[in-house]
Structure formats: C-alpha cells, structure tokens
Image (tube, rainbow, N blue to C red):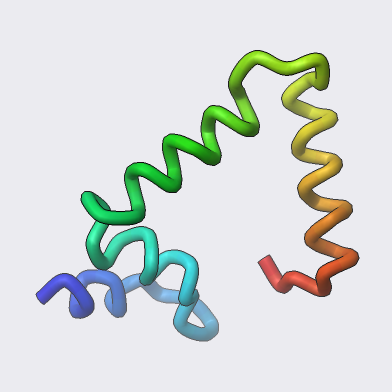
Length: 66
C-alpha cells in the first residue's frame, strides 16, 4: 500500500530519495527531515542562503542529480 502511494508520484524516473523518505516516515523520513531542517535552517554563523549555496556546490562536485 505505501509503495503504491509513493509510486503514484509522477516523475521522469522513480526518485529513490522520495521513496526512502515516504515509505516508513516514522523510522527515517521524519527524523531525517528534522535533522536536515535543523542543519539548513537552525542557528548558525552562515545564512540560510549560504548553506543552500554550499549544499548545491557540494552536490555538483559529487555529481548528484538532485
């Protein structure tokens, strides 16, 4: 049932990241999302924009398609 809902997301190809976050959100999705939100939006010497820029730059170095 849960995978049917996740597979219903229309995308050019299945997005593994979305499937991971939504399949069992109580085990991984919510805790991971909360940690990511704290890292990107929580207190820091860097602005939110700077953190987004750093994340995008690192993703491009890692050839991440997301």
